Length: 144
Picture 1 (cartoon, rainbow, N blue to C red):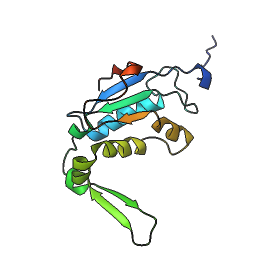
Picture 2: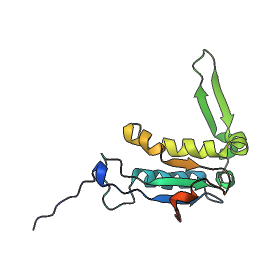
Picture 3: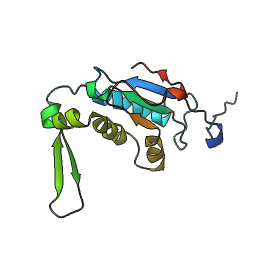
């Protein structure tokens, strides 16, 4: 009895659109599920070396929660490139001003740091509220 393994090819991949509602959900769990969908790990024909993921729309990022003391103890840290310009913003301020950015960097950190991860991030749409601009693609709700 011989079995064959199917490998996904770039021309044969069909992409669907999914909506994830982050209201009341932990930010990290929502980001992890979005990263798995962007990568294509929920599909039967997942191939690690091919980009076979789907499009993801995350809504209500402003209503996502951080558990424990993460709002005060977790920071987004980046360097501007100038000497002495290490910037640091607490997640309490980040979630109040730009919650979609907090979700974006959480999903970005869960994808691989290569070409597949960068092209997967182009299929992510993040919105702070419940309205989005992608009704024409007929996305379907994805339950966590």
